Image 1 (cartoon, rainbow, N blue to C red):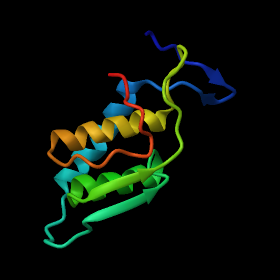
Image 2 (cartoon, helix red, strand yellow):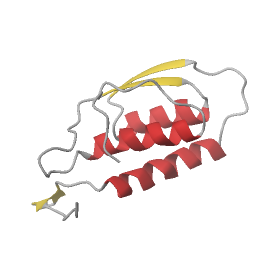
Image 3 (cartoon, one colour):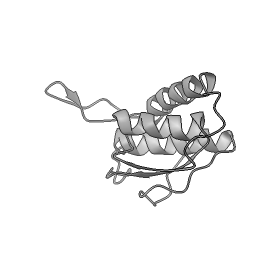
Length: 117
């Protein structure tokens, strides 16, 4: 599917999965590069509002930086009926893939339908 930008006022209402994945991977790489040298850190982390902003960054640092198991709680829209998913949906998919590639696959988020690649 070709994703055309839809803009309402000054807000873009579409999200591109590759753009979201690129940004999340940048955050994960940053967290891994600056991994703390402490032996003790959080083991299990619950983050409410974990799909964007501070919540997503907190989940990245806990999962990629400290190697903690993370559970993100959020309300996002999956792709359906020719519409793209919300940016938070794509962020979660990208984070789970990035952590999985590093051997730190977190439990499934509250958004349980499997994403389409």
